[in-house]
Amino acid sequence: MSRLRRSMLFVPGNNPGMIRDAHIYGSDSIMFDLEDSVAITEKDAARFLVYKALTTLRYGKKELVVRINDLSSGLGVADLEAIVRARPDVIRLPKTDSAKDVIECEREIERIEREAGIPVGTTGMMAAIESANGVLNAKEIAFSSKRLIGIALGAEDYVTDLKTTRSPEGIELMFARGMIVNAAKAAGIMALDTVYSDVNNEEGFIAEATMIRKMGFDGKSVINPRQIAPLHKVFTPSEKDLMKAHAIMDAIAEANARGSGVASLKGKMIDKPVVARAQYLLEMAERAKTITVEEV
Amino acid sequence: MEIKKTGVAGTMESSDIIVRIEPKNTEGVELTLESAVMQQYGRQIEKVIRETLEGLGVTSAYVNAVDKGALDCTVAARTLAAAYRAAESKDYVWNGGSIR
Image 1 (tube, rainbow over the protein chains, first blue to last red):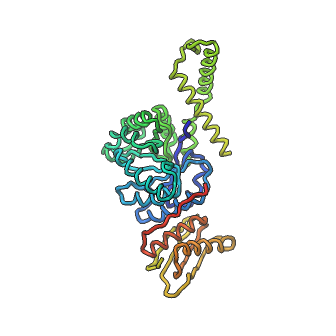
Image 2: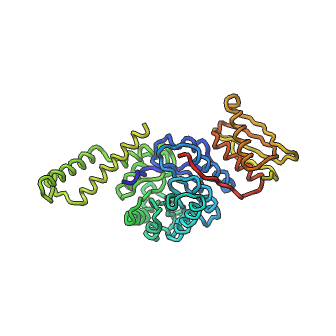
């Protein structure tokens, strides 16, 4: 099973204190940001800082992601020159409008991997979709590279493109979320949701997290460590769900032992998708348990 | 690397360090350092700054650093940023490698 990505904590790339402490909050992934959280005059300094942190500090088994600047900004290739050599797990490409954006970025990554003697293909990628055009191209983006571990929604730029604003209910994001989650699942990669900016509204945050989990998303970006625990709670199967999943697996095992192809539980037939969902739930719970044990 | 003008990098925030590098007419790197943890880490911070500059081939410069409890990797990163800015250079050399 692929790793859990329930939470991806944004860490501003020019903030040494946050870079130092990023691993203590328990997020599944840490995302060092060279893009929007870094002033244009500090791009070089942030690049040095993130490079040095990645090549010096230990973050245990956390997944390490770096959000670079987009290639059309004139900063993206310079970011890649540094960051690919620092060997993060994943590079997040922002403002992805088409498969071409991913392919161009991948070409640069591959060139740098070759130059640096890094095994080609070992740097993962994720693409953030942040425009109306990008949402319409979600499928071709999701299928554009074997390096992609997932695609993500970047809502702030997207709602600006739609000429609307974000609401607590997120009605303006329904189409984008639907497209992105479907495209990701069709390509067999993860769907990762956008940040919830109102850090003081925990109720709203939990409601949004619950909704996106229901939609099929695998996780969400967070901007404040406070959001990690409630997010993990939403994305971790409840005791009730687990008991049901175990009961389904037991019923299947019993049916198999009887040599019967048909299993039922409390009068309801258990078919293949039900088993697949139960298996996925149990795997998710197992992964979450492993992570918790590692952190202790 | 030739230091052509004043280059500064870093902030006064906790865990950071400000490194200021200026041109000097004579050979040698003259370093002044202020740190809240001078007694414990002063020598280590100075060592990281000097080694970083040596790695860049900077042999002549005035360096002033004000430390706010930065880790070695931050000291090195800020020294690199200040030096490249002071040299008006963007020919960055990334050595790669990771201890993870």
